[in-house]
Amino acid sequence: MSTPLYLTAHLGPYQSALDVAQRDLTDRRIVPRIWSHDHTVWHPDPAQIANRLGWLHAAENMTAHVPRLDALFQAVRAAGYTDVLLLGMGGSSLAPEVFSIVFGAQPGHPRLAVLDSTDPGAVLAYADRLDPARTLFIVSTKSGTTVETLSFFKFFYNWTVQALGADQAGAHFIATTDPGSKLADLAEQLGFRDTLLNDPNVGGRFSVLSYFGLAPAALLGLDVRRLLNRAQGMMAACGPDVPLADNPGAQLGLILGELARAGRNKMTLVASPAIASFGDWVEQLVAESTGKQGTGIVPVVGEPLGPPVVYGDDRLFVHLRLDGDAAHDAAHSAAIQALVEAGYPVVRLALHDTYDLGGQFFLWGMATAVAGQRLGVNPFDQPNVESAKVRARNMVAAYEQTGALPPGEAAPLTGAALREFLAPARTGAPATDAERGYIALQAYVQPTPETDAALLALRTRLRDDYKLATTVGYGPRFLHSTGQLHKGDAGLGFFVQFTADAPRDAPIPTTAGSPESAITFGVLEAAQAAGDRQALQDAGRRVICFHLGADAPGALHRLTEALS
Image (cartoon, rainbow, N blue to C red; front, side, top):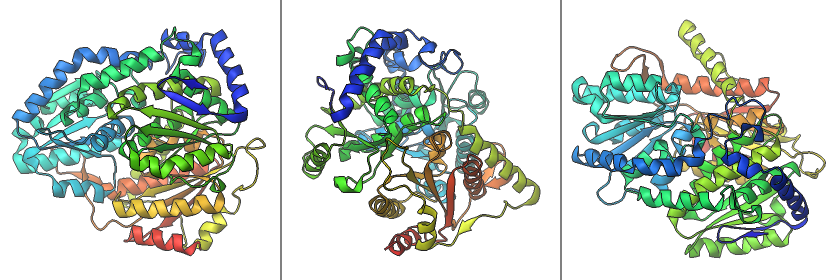
């Protein structure tokens, strides 16, 4: 099975089912109906579908706005900014992070960093490093009410006011939001440098080719027109009149959906190192779009590639290969071929250069829309996301009344406790008999390279021991990414939550410009961890919590060693 230039696949015994599904998609005209914004592709009710399909045309529509983005950069450069800190969560933050990591700041352009953690150490690390006089903030939230984003904003607005004065603070902020949002009003009141009002018909996780992704890209110095041109090329390849056999978006969506229905629902992404961060964006798109109504595709991102023996029969591998990446080819080509020879389904996607990510953003959007149709879910809503938010808000309200959070439920930090928790893991049942589980590590700690390495070592050990797919997410970041899947899928995940002590804390101002504060970032993070844990338990999920103390990386390494 192949689509020239974009996608090749080795599907073995699943090919016949894909052929049947392709005929069904053709007979029902699913792709032309998607392009015509026909909500009945997914559900008879247009709610949260009809007003979420603007992503189909975003690459074309945004071309007219490139001059405004160019002018924005010129103004930012003239003002002398050397750093940009984007404050956002989920769909507002993941694509800018990809651009920052993959491309970096071009000569003459400011550096871009992304803050999407309420851990006080993460917040204070930027306050310690950045120069208020030379830092621009992008406050990015579609709804304008995202609690994490507004908390970041209030903290850094006060930080800027303290350093530069209230009359100059507003010029250090840009808002990206939907028309009429609370943030749009706030930006006007406080005199933000600019407010970018996005097309409200573009959903958050599909918003990379709108202002949410392209404004940070422009500030970094990317060739935005080139990026949009690549996206438009993929739009044409996935167009309504393209035969399905030649339509890479439809083909990838069929593969994801049909193999998930057959039990291969652990979509494992293997990417060239230079574009590895793209996996975090894919993770949110696929997990939040498909993980609902008792089904879902579990994206496995960042898990080291191993030999066939360490994998169960629930895996589908997607290999994202960047041309010219000799180191990656040498390390992974043999391993990928071994998987093919062992009978694992493998999809290969080829990128000629990093600007081909523009095409990949659209490709995966179309694929996710098609996969949702095959799974019988609405890929544009997120019905279970609110559960953790509600419980976290209740925790915060209790704190404000009593001055304390409810007592925690931490288990002893021992290998025995983790082994006991994972004892029900199904290591031998074929995926055709019952969907196999996965292990999700949820770290409500400060993201650091040392903690990254410790979590990687732990997940690899668990993968090898239990032959289960593993995922890793920092909280509360993953709540806006895989959190929907965790509560909405078949419920066979094992959720291992980690909390830690923060050496410093930081207040969250009650209102921007006011010194009053009712809670701190440490309290908010703890409330989010407790709220998510309760939401998982209420949904019948298996969850355990370990408290790592003051040395999170060290405690994680000791836990991994204790599994020996």
